[in-house]
Image 1: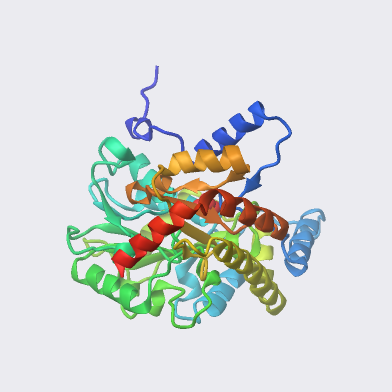
Image 2: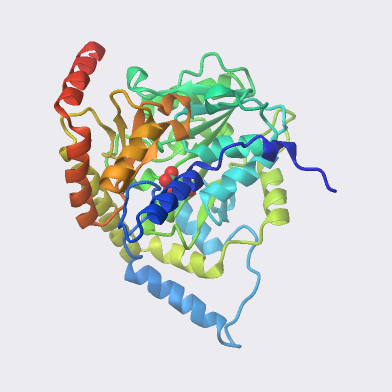
Length: 417
Ligand code: MLT
């Protein structure tokens, strides 16, 4: 028999969203016909705008004619799409050549681990999107799981209301790979320009790398807040940015993303990260779907961008309605991100998840699934229809806004301030 990969065995419990799907399925088996409101996984619900659908339809039609059929494309993605991303998203601060088109940010996060030696220390904002931890464990950068679901060898940097959701990096060893996600999944908070500048300086002084995930950048409503790490001087020497069309234009099922690997970025031995990423992607990946890329190009044209703004305004209005409904409670996020991060009074986050599932038929995400510091919180996603948001607001109010809870929270907030 062939030996099992010991790093996969370390993963233990299912990936967070599979665990949630399992629990939803169990409830539906127990209570068939129940309609659940999904405020759990951040999956877009509004249709893809017409100009983008039309571009994909045309691309599909071209594949059906002998004259216009094309097979394999350009390995790192269509040049036109790379140019558009460079201009529209990065204001030409990065060149099209530094942009690698992919099938989504999550896939790139996984592949990217192959760039780094197994000995590279990994640091994560805690809580954060679980795929970063999963990719680090699977690529052998950690020891076994410890109590509480954390892994030996990973530096968990608590991001809590007490520290303004900013990771304290001062104790990290030189040469650390630090994942940053802003706007943050799950807390919905955004790193300010000052905070991000300090992190870039730290990385430069300590020869660390930043893997910056900007999948939710299009939700940022203020010009003061950075949408990309490359808005920070000197970031091109220490940061890779990965991003996606999923949440900005409804491509969670279509699959299209990109990573920016600047030419200036080098490993400890002085060799080029760009060259290794180019080798890796051309070995393991054959360009993103040409239909999806046609949609991506349309999404960045005038009409697509106007539709994108409407979609984002719709989800942010959902978030505002949820915040308003829960307003006696302190609630984080939801202003520049489609996620709300809600502190709980006493129950564990899985217990609250179960209560909301059983009593209100609402699926949320338990905070602890995003890291040890997520215990005591639940994440509520604003990706839903307006009618589901109205229904959920009433149900959540009923269950979460008990008088005692509100008093406890008011006292806790007073102590904090
Ligand atoms: C989430 O809900 O955290 C995300 O939708 C998951 C993902 O993007 O893979």
